[in-house]
Length: 207
Ligand code: URA
Image (cartoon, rainbow, N blue to C red):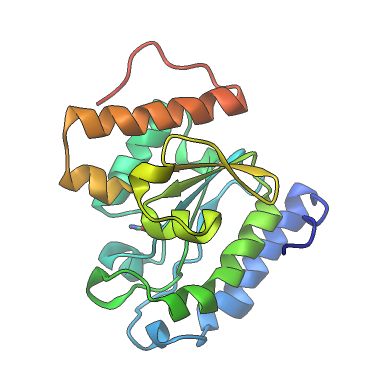
């Protein structure tokens, strides 16, 4: 189905490819209806050599206003998840299934996902992370395919073109269901990711 992954590029070339894709394509994209209601496209950001690439669903209101991924309430929790892994946001890469905000924060429609995800695929091909962490169902569905429920896939390793994939809950869901059980579930998923990339678990978890 997929061709083999292209060769890994030097950091500066990765950064340039990503910058050009954003500037020349994504920021001007009109491939689906979401372009009509967006304020800004949200390309994604982070270390072009990141070991871990997070895939969210799509921009919310704050992201649409700022043009940056995960900068609202869900973003604050994602920042804490990243910090809990002993990393800074600049050390990972953060992208979304769709680059424009769906009106009223509805889930992206199938045709919107089809139109937009070639950008995400090129981001992943360029960054070449060791692990992809999908946040929530739309990201898991696109990366793994044929996903029915989050409970059916989260916490177990999957693969996308040879890259290890760990699905977990979306931080917005964690905020809506803020129980110890849900938080510990996400943390156990992230600990598997840390082990995979050789990060030592911190002595104590930050809630
Ligand atoms: N939720 C997402 O899925 N992505 C963002 O960038 C922000 C919130």
